[in-house]
Amino acid sequence: MTTQQRLEQAIRGTGHISVGEQVNLVFMLSLPAIMSNLVDIVMSYIDASMVGSLGAHASASIGLVSTSMWLFGGLCAAIASGFSVQVAHLYGAGDKAKANDVVRQAFIAALIIGLFIGGIAFSISRDLPVWLGGSEDIIDDSRRYFQLFAIALPIHIVTFLMSSMLRCSGNMKFPSMVYILVCILDVVFNFFLIFPTRQIVIGNIGFACPGMGLGVLGAAWGTLLAWFTGTLILLYYVSFRSTELRLTFTGRCLPERRVLKKAWRIGSPIGLERVISCAAQITSTMIVAPLGTVAIAANAFGITIESLCYMPGYGIGDAATTLVGQSIGAQRSDLIRRFSVITLALAVGAMSLLAVVMYVFAPNLMTLMTPDLEVRQLTTDVLRIEAWAEPLFATSIVCYSIFVGMGKSLAPSIIQLGSIWLVRIPLAAVLAGTLGLKGVWIAMAVELCVRGTMMLVRLIIKLRHKL
Image 1: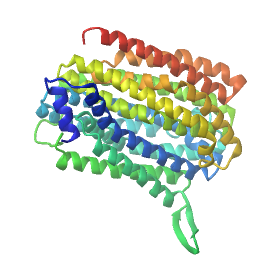
Image 2: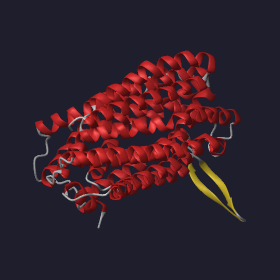
Image 3: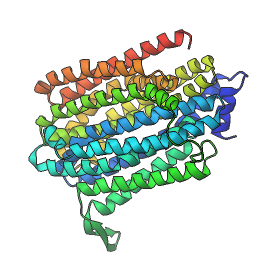
Image 4: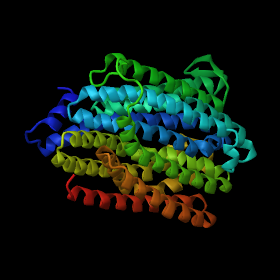
């Protein structure tokens, strides 16, 4: 029996589902997403080390605009959530025909919105590195890197949409496989695009390896080409091979008012949260930028390595959104409570374990990322600060995913925004002056603990009332 069949039997069945079966279902849905995230992280390390081998300035040029990229990427993810949660509810209610109608209408809407957002991003790309306080030696590389990212935004939004909808229907495996392929292709393309033609020796055999020598720009092109390939594969699968959802153009293509209205109700709080949250992260980047190139590079490396810890949290969060969303559609309030508890417990346990690993092996991980000793030491210090906040970070990730599955994204978005702007940013601004980058990461750790606590309290209140 496939994962989708077990999910349908569990959600829409009337019989008793044991705790062991519920845990097993969470694992079945989480594992592909976790493995995808794991490969993504490993490839990110390789990607960052490729650029890092060019020096701290190359790493800093990407790190400077990374938070701005998260802002636009977050908008794409919010739009995808607005439509994919509808698919989860319809799929849970057994109405696959309407679910496929949403897929078709969402695809058209996503293309239009993606082109609009990409145009905005490209229009600000020239001035963005200057606004962020980048030094003259990294501005040009940052500008070119962000411009290619802006061009790729319509591709990103379609990828987010198709993969999110497949996951909400219960198919975690295929979109995860595509993400793994995208990561591998990113590294392969980077290998030939970042570095110039060079001599490589393996054992006693030497050969000339061709390369374009594009540096930071090569990393941007590698990412764009990898995502474009992944998008084509997803579109082919959803159009011709998927047994869960099918993208066809035989019905209404322009989004119906009811579909757009529900997408707005679900997605707009998420989008607003992402915009204001990323604006806070951009503000953090502006706080870090005056600390120098080493601090910018260490901050970028620290964010990359920390993803090792929250990788299972987001994978289990994907499972929580699917399980809770389909339980809502099937009107199974008992399963909503059970799946909420199980996914929270698993995420906190997994991220706590990985926090210990990160704390112990941070210096070893940094030796793979950059030859710069000063950057290595500073990154190790901030990662060990952040490790203490990972359990409550896991709580906030999964609680947020549960609320998204419920279609109740407003309150958790307000909590997230309030904690970032009222705790993280003011505290970072104060501590950066005396503690440098360490002060910024202390502020981040404190804020994550506050956010996780507030999210958990909100979820407990919600689960105690009638859903």
